[in-house]
Length: 142
Ligand SMILES: [Zn+2]
Ligand SMILES: [Zn+2]
Image (cartoon, rainbow, N blue to C red; front, side):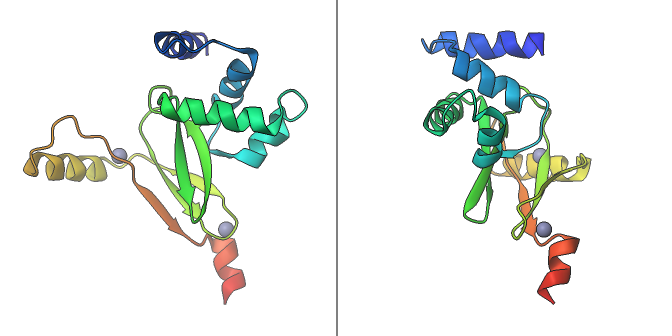
């Protein structure tokens, strides 16, 4: 956490953004956790920081590459970016909104690297999200 916090602060300072209490609290709340929805964030921080401020902080974090957005249907969750968390992918449920991290699969990474190479793309980055219905929700569908 200490290292991450240092990195976090240096990103803000590099961009002349102040390290405010609200920004530190949102960062600390996302740290070490999986993707969180805005209402989950609000539930955890609601008594300290109002909803509008949380939205504003998350928006700034997104612009600065501190968090990334995971789209689930028309909703989204946010989690800390790959600056702070090892590269990984998600599977999300379109019904209940649960998000599962996918265990690392070398084959996906190699394939994507190969596709980038073939298309003459250097320093490729990628996001891959799989969406569908989890076992519980699929059960309710039928
Ligand atoms: Zn589900
Ligand atoms: Zn990947």
